[in-house]
Amino acid sequence: MTRPGPPPIALAPDERTALNEFLDFYRAALVDRCYGLTDEQLRQTPLPTSLSLARLIGHMAWVEQFWFVERFGGDDPPAYVRAIDWEGDNDAEMTLAETWDQQKLFSVFDDAVAESRRRADAASLDDLSVGTNQAGEHWNVRWILVHMIEEYARHCGHADLIREAVDGDVL
Image (tube, rainbow, N blue to C red; front, side, top):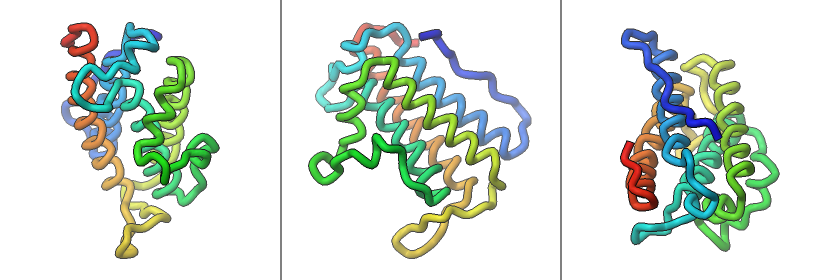
């Protein structure tokens, strides 16, 4: 795996560019926390939590497809998601990710990110989701992008702590 490093962010971007660049920054930052680790290290849970870097990558792959494929597009999730036993395990996407080697883990993640980018780029920031919340309200693409930035930012903090506990790396 090539160390990705976060991409540069424009200092005076338009709204869409700002949202996309910050989201891509956090996507790359999460992957960067995994750079140079073995499969075993990616599965380590060195803190008093069930979180590992592999579980975080698997979770974010699922979050990408959930928001852009299911919620926004109203489409069926990928086959691996349809096969998950959510009733038996509330964190099933994370548990499944731990069974994958790095190649599979990052392939699923990269595919989910590529599909999310494709769908977001093809839409207006004001386009509404097909899916709704419990009150029947729709999300627009702008809200989904901001939510994804928040989700990644939170999990990148978790990844920083886990990576430091695994091997002392503190980028």
